[in-house]
Length: 230
Ligand SMILES: Nc1ccn([C@@H]2O[C@H](COP(=O)(O)OP(=O)(O)OP(=O)(O)O)[C@@H](O)[C@H]2O)c(=O)n1
Ligand SMILES: C[C@](O)(CO)[C@H](O)COP(=O)(O)O
Image 1 (cartoon, rainbow, N blue to C red):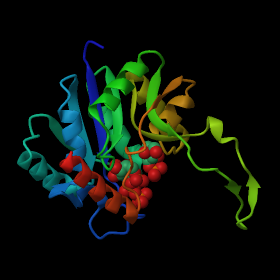
Image 2 (image 1 turned 60 degrees about the horizontal axis):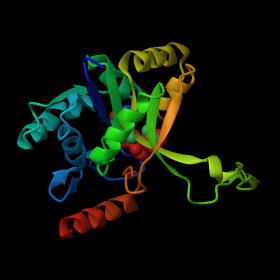
Image 3 (image 1 turned 135 degrees about the vertical axis):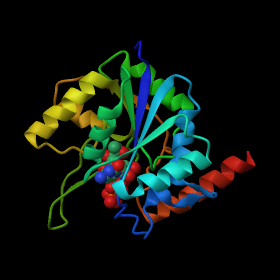
Image 4 (image 1 turned 180 degrees about the horizontal axis):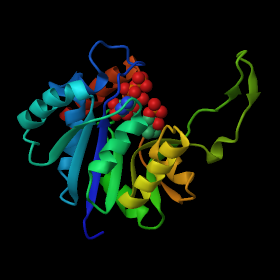
């Protein structure tokens, strides 16, 4: 990894499930937009040479302002994204010039430096690595009529998070192949898997939540308050 690691942080979504007027990545947590909390974790790692923030075309200017206000402007580049998460990640990957890449959701602000490092290290033993936690609930498959059709064995089920780490050239190839085939996935590893790449799962933590629905914001405020008191 001569050219080191880069990270693509995606923050171009609309946050439909959150239902707020302001996009969830820009909501304030302790006076700071959510995505700034996320950027700060990655910016604190010297081994990350490039940080690309991908946001909506209409939000690039205000993101640049926030980035400057929080003294992250020497570390972070801001570019416009696309219609789906996959398109936004793809734009970010094209903007990087490193050997390794981490992809992370801008709305997962509680990832830790240790988890990021573990993910980078684990990708060396395979072709990719993802942070994840074992599923805690019993999972059921349910049909369109609301009836249970199966109860999969949860011992092999994991909830997948970000960051997800890969060699940049391989992940770019996977993204280009998905685009050619019109394939849309919900995470980066899915695209790598369809190229036959091996993906290692790294046990993360249940606190690395993605802010998705309104109660996640309450959890985030509660969590940050606890961290402040420690
Ligand atoms: N076109 C998109 C869609 C999503 N994302 C980003 O991908 C991450 C994870 O996606 P998700 O939680 O699904 O975010 P949204 O698409 O914003 O939410 P929703 O699906 O509820 O609309 C978020 O950081 C989001 O900003 C992105 O960069 N570009
Ligand atoms: C990449 C991801 O965070 C893995 O859990 C997630 O898939 C992204 O967004 P989603 O729209 O909630 O699936």
